[in-house]
Image (cartoon, rainbow, N blue to C red):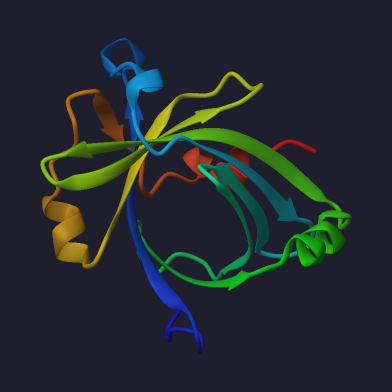
Length: 160
């Protein structure tokens, strides 16, 4: 990709496999969310429902493809429940995750546990700059950096 699409923002994100034996007790972590993603067929659109706390959020996201192993332009559109339900009827592949928030060295990490599928637990963090991302020291439970590996992208773990 040579130019950033109009209205998009750069998502700067790193992802790591985790050693599940070293993870903190997830039930004690704040900010627990249930995330239901539907990756719509025939494109790069993701429909997302985020449940947790006192509210539910609905989003439609367009991912444009990676600029580097950790940078990708994205556009989010926030939806009403009615708009979400209308789009939820479109064909696509589903992925449901429990997301737990974990702070390490003043960096907020997300720990993602896929529901109903035997896949690795992945920790991720978003950053304001590529420099900040590359300098980040992950928590001790993080093992291999899989930021640039497509087989560990959520869309690859989704099922029909």
